[in-house]
Length: 181
Image 1 (cartoon, rainbow, N blue to C red):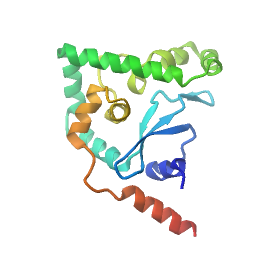
Image 2 (cartoon, rainbow, N blue to C red):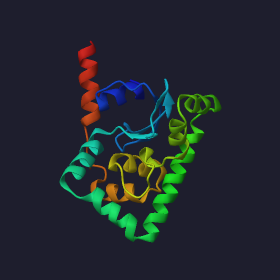
Image 3 (cartoon, helix red, strand yellow):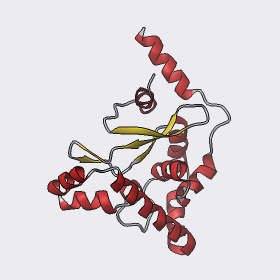
Image 4 (cartoon, one colour):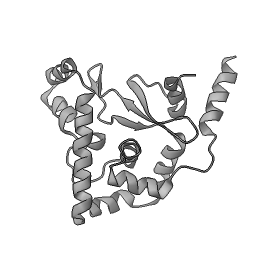
């Protein structure tokens, strides 16, 4: 089974802007994907998308049961080194997004709206424009796992890490294959 289909099983939805698998989990399944930033006049400001069901669940739980987003936002305001590292992560992310776009796509985005164009070329991790806060732990974790240089994502990963054993994706693939026969 190809990665695209596995990712759709992981996320339980169709993915029209899949570009490639950016990172595999220790169990051999896609964990983070790269998505096309602009498809069918629609922007996807999050270029790295967490597809791993285990990590998605753990980040959901972390967001629901902790004040981590708020704590990281406070750290961003009070810790100059953390802020500088986050600014570098946002800049790198914007550059990566621009690299994924052709000149024709950038022109088309500009024709749709100047605001859309600016979001695609200037926004940071997860499409954040005002870089004074933390928008989404999922996208910061995905960015950290691929690039190893997102301090917010590193904090998240240090709180959850990979499981010792995981069968979620294998079970979803097996269930899909058995229902297709």
